[in-house]
Length: 278
Image (cartoon, rainbow, N blue to C red; front, side, top):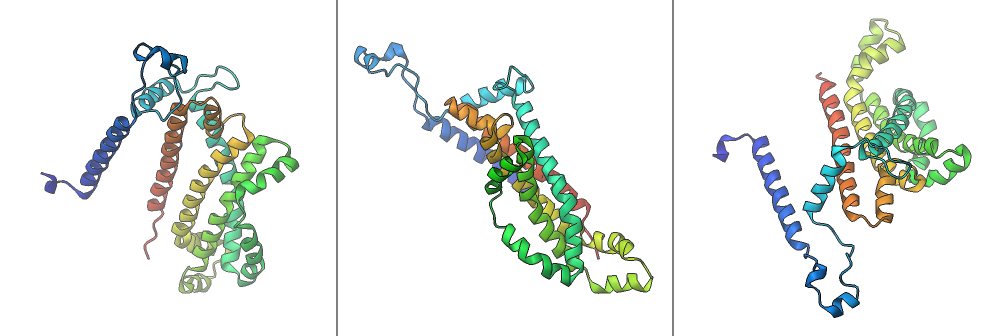
């Protein structure tokens, strides 16, 4: 029967089997806690009747997911907001810093890719700044900008710019010179050549850089929000950890993964849409 299925269908079935198997093993591995009625007087005196913190079973996490996702946008005060609101704040910060980075990285990448002089001039700065951890910029950003929201956006900007810049420069530099020469023979200006010849050829590489950047930005915003606090999925994780609510922590970790997967899937679709055939 499985032989009649496509590779994608068989892979989906295998993934489902692994998921169910993993959840069952996880559920079985969590020891059941004794209730107060089943404890001896000595155990009660030792405080064993109190609920202890521990890794929750999948059933508890599913119950938490149902509770949170049934009303994701409630707002009961500064420290009690729904998961939808928290993710919304994070996505807003990510996209703000990300698109600011794109406005800088893509034009600058074109310049570097089309000019050897520009490449040699900018390369030392890129090689020095690129390896710096984005979170290392956070103290300086907080001191200079003096606003946690803008500082978080700046950190996203600084971590998003390098993959887009490097991939854009690489894609532009890799465009076949024959095509550029044909554009020159047709007396196309530099701007028109860039948009009609170079951009379509370099688009797949540029989108790859943008896809890498959005993944890095989503990773960094979680850590940044743990530092600055207030709102966002990173703050939600840290706040629930301070409350020793591991069920909420694991649920939020899963939500971070789901949102990251959706962001990557969106750029995967875009990447296929701009595939360039010679």
